[in-house]
Length: 365
Image (cartoon, rainbow, N blue to C red; front, side, top):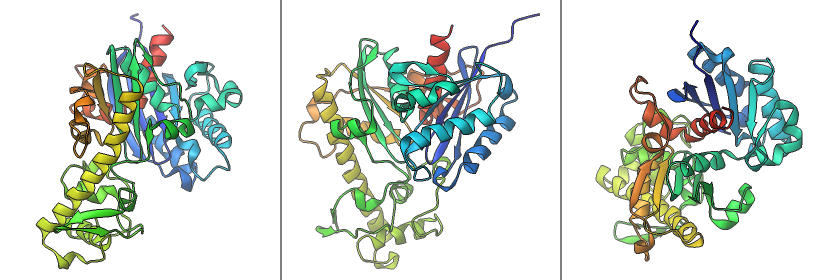
């Protein structure tokens, strides 16, 4: 009988989404994402795992490689409890046979469920490290720019390894390699305190009136498949309702300006976020002395912003930014030719889940 293809499912367990990749014969054949408001309870994780089991008949026979960031949610009293809680939930739901479940622990390697308590600090929020290590196997030098729904990772790599010595979120917040900017869940008031609109600068309201999903929905750049969370006011996601939320940010109502004027306001918010993330990108490039020959590898549902970051919109030193680009989905992930249409794009969005599956197989041949 022919030997069955090796199957690995890579998992990225976040605080707001669960992302998963099905790898067969070393190739990506499917990628999926489920909304998972983990702060509301582990039952949301259980539902996502069940959805994957239904989607993939090979689920119970597969190896499972896991990374996570969900330990940060306030469901847990601290990050250690979060790692242990998520690991226990996965161990209970995934195949129970020995050697079926493995946790990515960065510099500590791979952990079994029994080793999680000892290595929880290496396991916590290590998904960015997996993605950057995977990219470093493909390109000689570069920087990963993974813009998600909530955060952005800016990670330099070269000579087959990740260049930063930072490992924790706290360290990366100091170094500028982690930006709490995303294209869906970030409150608009976090982007800037003053906005230029209608020929004048206005202070903005520091209230949870609108999110970046409103900005990119109005700009026509946010894929509805990534717009999974309720709006700030729990109202509709129609264009008029979106304009109304943005209008509140400057003390107005949707009827107080034209659709074109509200689009200009959304573009101003967009420019503010591009400048904020772009300044951190330039900081990372300078810190690691990357040349203009470095490759900017884009990932995440906000990858559409990366070209503007690299051309230095609003930047005073755009010439220092490399202008070579690659997308994680088509340039790093090994997507099977027979995979369904759109899988390359989903591999781009769910890059850490692809990376942990690929790294696990590479390191366990």
